[in-house]
Image (tube, rainbow, N blue to C red):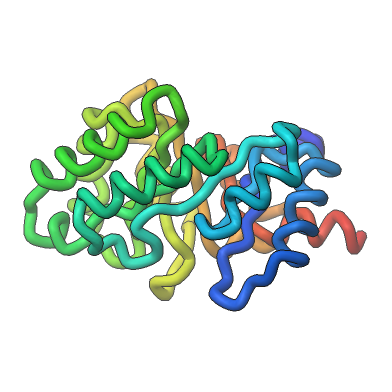
Length: 216
């Protein structure tokens, strides 16, 4: 697989708690230079990144991150604020406890509420696969398929586990045709990235692929 094709699927990511603007600026510059799909950064940096990028690249940010247990109203406010500041893509974390309790109707209602705020902007739904059973993952594939969101996303990378090949394959077999997959967390090499794309992922959340190419 051509490196340019891999890079065009990468949401070049910096979400560390101690990130500072010069680091975010460098990630933005690299994402443009290497032809990434977007730059994925914390909400507090979105406005500054929008001023820096001047529309050269979509800005993705995270909502309800990383734990997902904020109220629906808070997630909707975060989303509205992020879009106002210049984000074009939203990665929201579901309330995992609702899924563990089988309250999929509440998960669906919340995703639909956030999608209503997003409008035509892309919404990716983080389900945190490392905390879920296979049955729960399959049920959430249906929930996301019914929600209007564009993507189901594996992981935040902050809950003790990231994307696995098995989970991406599982998603590919259970999502509706209009839903895409974002694999995130632990994608460390070009070989990893190629594997996930071949298994059905359309986006990759990672900070290390660009770094590998820069250092090669």
